[in-house]
Amino acid sequence: MRWALVKVCVAVTTMVVVAFAVPLGLVIKEMARDRAFSNAERQAAAIAPALSITTERDELERVVASAGSDAGIGVHIPAADGKPAVEIGKQRADGRDIAMTRRLGRASTAEVPGGSTLLQPIALSSGEIAVIEVYVPEAEVSNGVGTAWAVLAAVGVALVIGSVAVADRLGVRMVQPAQRLAESAHELGEGKLGSRVPEEGPTELRLAAIAFNSMADQVVQLLANERELAADLSHRLRTPLTVLRLNTASLGDGPAAEQTRTAVAQLEREVDTIIRTAREAKPQTAAIGVGAGCDASEVVRERMDFWSALAEDEGRKVRVAGVDRPVRIPVARADLAAALDALLGNVFRHTPEGTAFAVDVHNAEDAVIVLVSDAGAGIADPVAAMARGRGSGNDGSTGLGLDIVRRLAESTGGDVRVGSSVLGGTEVRIWIQLDGRAPVRSGHRGSVRRRRRGAGVR
Image 1: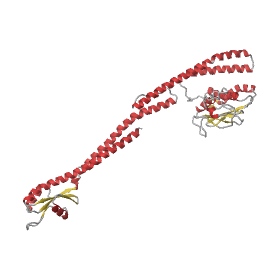
Image 2: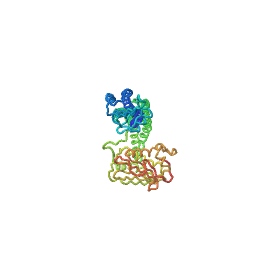
Image 3: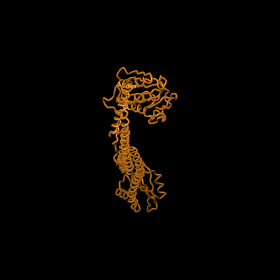
Image 4: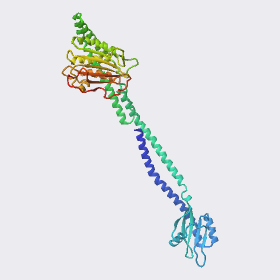
């Protein structure tokens, strides 16, 4: 915008300067020519009275010398009454031009080498017509024209430079508020909720800044209300959790009872974590700090130990691969555990008992791939499954499980794909980028692969 204003002002100022300077320059040139020939006419007029009195050479030479340079003035008197023609001074004009002026009886000009001549006819007492020739050099015709044109050019350049300076100041006054508005919008998009725009600049931009600040305040208020709502809803779960914990104490001993008590304790910890996170005043960001991360193999082994007991009770075959050595990933341990629990919970919820499932970990140079696959009937609508909060509605699904996994992968620059597994059911592939770069491969984040229709959305 700034350079656009400068270009417009340069164009407009240049057109105005040209429109005025060119005609003015031509007028100055014409005025210089008129001035030179006016001087020549005055010199001719100084000699005319003498010609009306006498035609003697000596007298006329003295008059010519007193009128100006005799090298620039010539007098041509024709022969009359037996007297020969008299020529005083140097003749520069052509004889035909002199004869034409004598015959027409009016002043004229003629082009000669080095300039022009003014031919002025004068009537003599004898009735003949004498012609006074005054030489006007080209230098006298153009005297002062070059200087005047240079001044006009300097004034034009000064006007253009001045317009550029004014346009640049106006552009800065308009561009800077717009840049601050764009920067604040980027900061707000990155999670810096305290970003605000100074309410200054032109009226339109000032109104835009006021609207942006109002929007940012409302976003902060909405997020605060959402955190409070999440905390309140999570806090309501404590009462039924307390009842469950008390009831598990009466289950006695045994693997099933111990597993139930462990699940209730973990559920209590997760609810407490949700409440604390929701009460946090500072917005969370997706940045991974130095030293943050976990061992994916260890987390997979731990969660599979938990789910294997339930799988054994339901007669499911379980396979785990790629967890025999450490695999460091830039993801918090709790986040990876939550993502695995969401996927494995989907397997138990949406596939019948006895359905096999597997978890594979592949460690590449720049990424880690975690595959969770099952031998169920698959997902009928993978696109709907990848959309947050779009559960099937008839099987108790909220549609948030895959969204949790997607946000975990995208926080590292990776993505999630849903497709067909080698077991015949659903395969969810989590691509975790190790260096934070966007993955260089076909497809896009949260992409899906079409497969046969089957079970509901997870």
